[in-house]
Image (tube, rainbow, N blue to C red; front, top):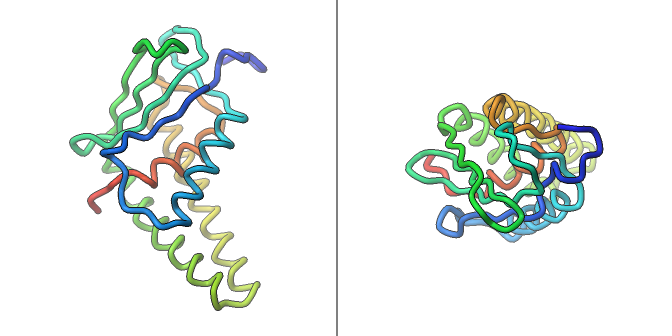
Length: 160
């Protein structure tokens, strides 16, 4: 991926509606912000050699995380399927810490909220690294893009 190459980016991100899990207002808001931030600034490219910019659809189908990558005209480029197993534990822990964070906002002290938020951010970073690792050799992205994509992956319906 070339530095500053404007074609190596996402121009649209969709989440398959049938893959969306139940979401709180906070979760939906985070998803909207993640998509907005992702489209505003990202580095994303396939290693297949097809030029971007790209459209991405995320889905969860038959226990596989699906990355459907298309070109600007919505023609299919590549679809990558990832086993969900490596994500189960971190996703479960991440959801738990997010629930603690939302509950803490209502009644905890600022220092307690900050401590929970630091743990949440650390776990989010770990998840982004795992995503980059699982997509290595398939899709290349920078770390902020991986973090935002993980936020969207959290929205998918996972049977934990």
